[in-house]
Image 1 (cartoon, one colour):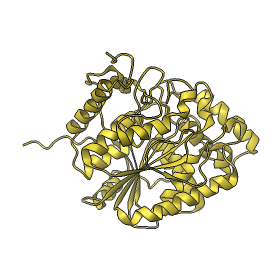
Image 2 (cartoon, rainbow, N blue to C red):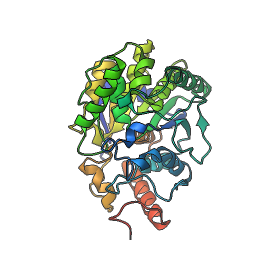
Image 3 (cartoon, rainbow, N blue to C red):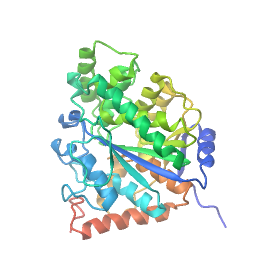
Image 4 (cartoon, rainbow, N blue to C red):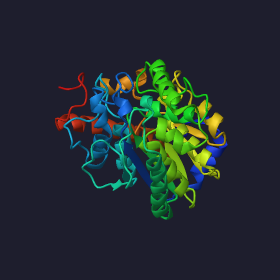
Length: 375
């Protein structure tokens, strides 16, 4: 009998990725999803993680409400792009439900408080506009890092593998800000939820903020305070705390994870061969960004793996849009799928069926999904 085709794409440092995944086989898993908002997402053209720029502020809370309860509570609509394409939380929920992966949500500064049980960091704060150089107060950036680190110390002894995901509209723009603010030549390398990556707009925003900052800094908290957001620095703190224990870590996301790696690097924390990035095929195949290039520049020993999910034969137009370059990644979709497949044995067919069932259930419950498929 032929061996089933693997749906993992080893994009960078395959041997190291296989070692990290095998070290967690049959181990306990925990997913941690960080949410937060930045007013940068309300700048027209920056983010399509919401039907309008203003609705991007609701997206993080609604994403995790849907993850937790299977339906949004704040509004009767899962987050969609202006074209009506659904959130990648659809993929994440299907993966965690089908493989029984436990998860927690960490609020680092969500504009709307999610109506679910979750952890709130004491210094949570919505990020300001980075073109004005006012992302966060310096002491808040530092406190969020330390609070994330302390939280990781609580959970790390309970698990062998942790998946860290995020929901922050405008996050690739703030990630670019953090990277450039730390002196990396990352222009044109971050991704977008749109097939038309607005690099010119992102660069304009970051350059305006960088000018107000007075140029790059070697201090990661300064870069975050001027050009970042609450999510990436909190994730970096959690990663630092997790590395103090024995767990392996999958950073579940795309080019935003480069900003997390950069913060940890500039604080002087060793990754000790236990960290990999888990993303999706759509992100890896995106010609408008360069995740592996960013990793080589920042932390060249960190492997990158993508889950080869394919919606080209989906019965739903909203999902087929993913194959046209929309959305690509978010809410830990790629990393969660990789963990579900490798550690929990979830097959590609089962995952696809679970996603389609979720999509159909949402339509049946009367929750708005997208225009083409709404009956």
